[in-house]
Image (cartoon, rainbow over all chains, first blue to last red):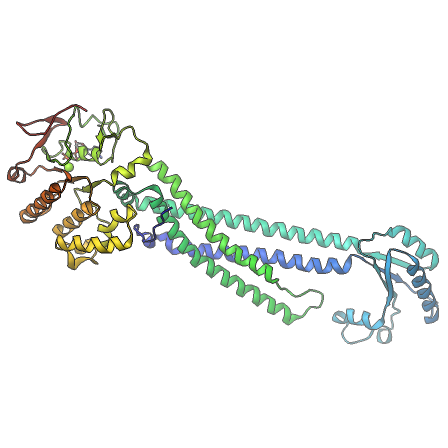
Length: 298
Length: 220
Ligand SMILES: Nc1ncnc2c1ncn2[C@@H]1O[C@H](COP(=O)(O)OP(=O)(O)O)[C@@H](O)[C@H]1O
Ligand SMILES: [Mg+2]
């Protein structure tokens, strides 16, 4: 296809030329943020999933007359039992220090058992071997038979909830992206149609001079391409800035439970890809719109 | 030929023009001169009948063949139809660019031709800053820049003084000498009488052949 860059139609003075880059920029901004949100959530849920699956927490709730020695015995019994189960890789007691560290955001610097005077349950963290499934009901029963006051938490339920949640967010993000694409296409169709109407006289003239359909179509796609580059770049720059800004805020707050709000390098490429896609879609839309309308005009 | 659902404007018109001929289409205002030219530059299709151009029946060709045929026709429109947003140079370069000529060719030929029609100093001016006569010369330059085989001019002398009208006619004579077929539509009797050229005379949509006027009245 012989493409012709020199503009013949005065498209740059069309009203749509002023707002098209803004609209495309805003769309790209929205789409990249939606994309980034779903990516970050999937990063987070992958983190959590990794921690939560393949682990079982066992609590020993102290009864009223349990002293430290009795608790220690119970703990030893349980650990011995757990070590005999083939699916379990390792089991260890979560130390008071570790518990304190985990609870620090809520309780501050006070240490649990000494200052608050609450008897704390013993926590045993058992890791499953990779890809091993365990019958938690059977395990729970046999643990309870060995030691009274044992409670078993497997995290499958939590993981399921978490996955459902991130799935929902992902669907929302996807919907936003689809809506953004549809409205971008509509905008380009509208402005191309307006352009064809405004300049119908010049277009007719170029026909008489022997212009082929592609010649006129290229006028529109090249013009839209330029505007989309402008808008796409602005959208990318502002959304990157937004993401970096949000990331730095999250880091400043330093909530230990939420993993850092970062995109991987590969996901940054995806963000760039959205910008390029927007430019591509706009250009192709302008070209096809012109094609369809020109067919109808002559 | 008819416009929309109107009466037929051109009726029973049948003529053949030889390659390399130079013909006037004459007739009073409203006789159908512009309409006939529009048929020839393929702006309209006739409601019935046939038009053969360059040996092809243009009422039957594929639409993808239209641009190729139109590129062989140069037109000086009645109201010039220059593109206001383009400079003199870009207006005249349009047919070359549409035909896919390189920018090197554009740079070489367009200023040369504009120089020749006396617009060498106005290459970068926009149409609105030009006088009527200058606009007309731009329109002529645009019509001939791509060396058309057929040149059509609709009332080319309507908006300009005699001096320029004559100059234009001599330019057409030159082009005719190198083989361009030329048709000029006009109702300007002084112009017609100044040149001894065959004429197709239209009267309310019908064709008259004044004595010894047209080369050949054969039916096609
Ligand atoms: N676009 C049009 N729509 C309808 N009628 C038209 C149109 N153009 C011209 N006519 C009519 O066709 C007839 C011939 O017009 P035209 O070819 O312009 O004559 P001329 O160029 O000889 O003055 C006139 O009666 C005119 O009113
Ligand atoms: Mg006329």
